[in-house]
Length: 206
Ligand SMILES: Nc1ncnc2c1ncn2[C@@H]1O[C@H](COP(=O)(O)OP(=O)(O)OP(=O)(O)O)[C@@H](O)[C@H]1O
Image (cartoon, rainbow, N blue to C red):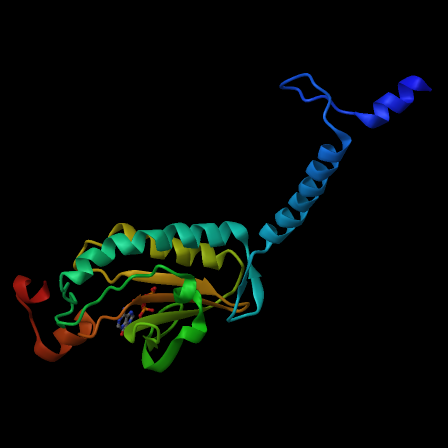
């Protein structure tokens, strides 16, 4: 009986000091620990995609955030009046420090630019920066499709110094669509230019 009472008074030893932890302090610790499972649940679906109202997977969000972190570094170049490789003088790159790039509501669609093998490309304005962008809109056939588009965006990012490729700004998805926001290249396609002007020199192609 004596033994039982003592155990209930100080049930746990501090492994560091070997001393009994006061019941009062233990209760405070347990109260604090109770908060952890709640946080873990929240982290399973942390962000809602405002375009679709669906939860973005934590894994995808981490990948997006990791990629977005790379943008401020490149924006240094854009501050030095980087030129549009298509010939325009406008700045082509801005900071993407926040997930605003991933919200379709922040883009206003202007007109259709063309159609590729997988979907349409529309000219849009990124409202936050008043910046033109080409958004590739692809109808999702299967969940895996988003992975392939992200891979395309990653390749464009890796090759971002190449003056012949446009840059990827963001990839995001709704339930049925995949959207890839690209740097807008205003000069038209090389094919169109060759059709209009005929043969071009190497310098003109560059
Ligand atoms: N970044 C851009 N800036 C301006 N126009 C673009 C841009 N990307 C695409 N376009 C326009 O949209 C059209 C379709 O482009 P898209 O890349 O979808 O076609 P694609 O070359 O067949 O590629 P894919 O095989 O990936 O579908 C292009 O021909 C071009 O006119």
